[in-house]
Every structure is written in structure tokens, then in C-alpha cells.
Length: 218
Image (cartoon, rainbow, N blue to C red; front, side, top):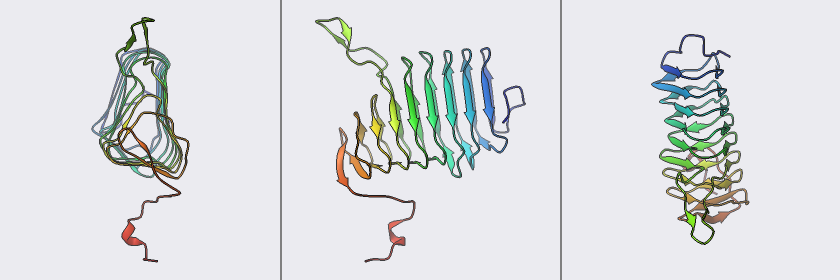
């Protein structure tokens, strides 16, 4: 692993504006048009080796935040991780992520976002652990939309243009249909979740990376 004091990797720029930040990058990492910006103190970013990081963006403001991306034998493309408010937020991505394009926004409290291992993400995916602004109950004069964690299990396939909202929980071995808006906790593994708002539309399934045409008809 390499700390921030080593010269930047080719294809990666690092702008560390704080103190006591750690940026640990596997020596085997390959970058293309990627950047890390940190404005705060005592933050830690850990990047495992992948086939390549293409247009990776990490933008942190605040203190004691943690971002970790596991090793992957796939390409990670257009992954944007933004946390510009709050402190102590955590993003954990398991090994072997394949990603076409995802944007994560964590801009409020000390919430977390967790992605399991062996996940397949299409493009146009957005995840938000907070609404960013308050919705107030008039009678009590208190917010009713506090930030919440997002959790994605192992071996989850998320199709294009999916929205993951605060409190979304997706179990392992699920497929999320294109354009779905996930707003709540699901607890059934091996299911297809789709729609607006998302719901379980098919059960007792599994998926793999092969094209359907590669299977022989029964």
C-alpha cells in the first residue's frame, strides 16, 4: 500500500487540504482521469487494486470519514463518492465490484453506505443517504426525514438509472430493475425488485454474468 506522500499515480490527482489524512492505494492500481479531494482532517481512503479505475471521483469535506474499496477483477467506471457535510461517514465497497456508473451523495449526518462483494452495477445509478434539506412536522416543529444508512448485500445486480434513497436495504442475490426507486428495507434474497416505488416482482431467482443466449433451451 502507498500513502499520500508518494507521487501521484498516473491518471490520478490528489488534493489533500487537511491534516492527518491517510490515502492508501494498492501498488497495482490503474487510473484514468481520476481524482481525490479531501478538505478536512483524520480521514482515510483505501483503494484496492482493480483492472482499472476510470473517472473515479472522491470528494470529502469534514472529519474522520472512511472510504474503502476492495480489490476487484473488474473495471470500476464513473464512480463518484461525495461527502461534503457531516463527519464520521463511512462508505465500504466489497471485493469484485463491476461498475458502469454510480454517484453516491452523503451530505448530512454520520450515516454509512455498504456494498457487499461480487456486485454488478450498470450506469446512471444514484444513492443518497439524506434528502439534503429538512421536511418539518408543523405540530412538533421537528424534522421527519433524518438521514439513514443504505446497505446492499452480496452478489446484487443493479440495472441502469436506479435510485437508492435513505434507508434502502437490498438483500444478497437480488436484481434491481431499470429505473427503480428503492425507498425502504427489503428482506427477501433471490428476488427481482422493480418499480416506482420499488417492490418485489419475482421470487426464487438467481443471476450470473452470462448472456441468456449462452444457455441451452430446456
